[in-house]
Image (tube, rainbow, N blue to C red; front, side):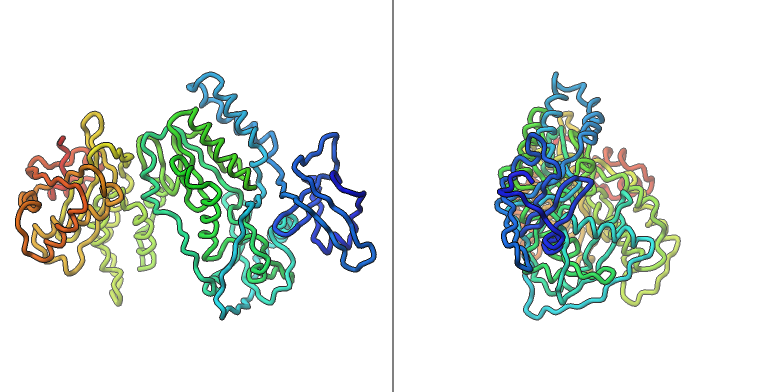
Length: 577
């Protein structure tokens, strides 16, 4: 054993007592110690295989029943990705370097090899991080384990042994137990998770939460290069405090085990991970690093800038002991999937796989299936101007004690909704140096709005759609009331874009609204709306309805029914300001 102060023999008793394991594939001895797993190579060469280990391993008490093992200052070591996988990644990327500057391939190759130790299929251990479970004093739980399907048992047993060897779980004497869930992964492997629903009821929530997705999607104007990093089994890189490990115990085939790392399946797992990852990366990386739970996206304007940004992020993660799964990471992309969206320098579009799911969704036969469909499309409502108008015509089926009756009318609405998502637009990135333009519409059942900007060719580009159905007390509003409600709603919905912005132009074909900013108001509701609008730098402009045909939207949406409705309701103006 390199760096040992005296020749040392580890017997069966000491290996059993300290859960020391031999990994013959990696050719290392794994020794769990506090929140780390020290890895010692079998065969030292002329140069130490683990340069950073300066530990002393000594068998102190020879005659005692419980041997003492002393390990000092020993960081965890992970087995890095082999050269073959790294070479394959570089080979796949090589054609994309033809358009870059000379030596760009070598620069990127050297950068990845510089940080090669961080790329591993085994979870690292984040230094300075530790998860605590803040439990309510009334906590008690003993839940029965779920039976493991026969076809998965062997893989589960193998995964258990692997995780024990990696120091992710350990034998337990806990009086508590939680069900274990076996989740099939896309690559055919399995993931073991805790069914922590009962335990989570007794954990005081951590208020750390991921940022709003729409807020994150505002950052990408002018971006050319993108890299996404996949942290290896992200949550399992956070050590769990030893006092909290008994609470996450589970039982498999008569064995009592417990997690030593933060498990998947708890209500606080995501928030704890977010807090620790943000502490590692720091606020200074925010301009070019976007994180959402365990998704890390690095964005840059130029190739040279991207290499610099990537080096900074990899250095930070390596310094703190994180590991990245190379096979699931994507480098130097001009088009990338992130948070269910496709991001390019041109804009943001729907993930084609999600469009396919919507397209293939069968007509619902009960309330539960309808709720599932509406939940799916609601995530992408910003891509559909008529979302609320159409879905509002299906809401009667969701009412309590309402008999389920799916007729040709509901079928036509259902198909129209799917058509609009299939023909969805590309939402452009906002340019905060230019004015925003908002076009609003109010129908008898819904209000809607489009946030836009003029491009360099003086063409309006859609940034986001917004819509909602009218509430019962809003249905009797006059035309003026509904139009003003639409304007107020649009400003509230697009607040993150237009609040504090130097100018936002509201286009309306309702002439009375253009005088609202200067007339004397006495009606309470309209007065409240106008006071709310004073938070923004608005300019309300009247435009004739005959000139108010959204040609660009029509060209992007092929549904004939949609074209008829757009012309009928005169939704937006696409004339230059």
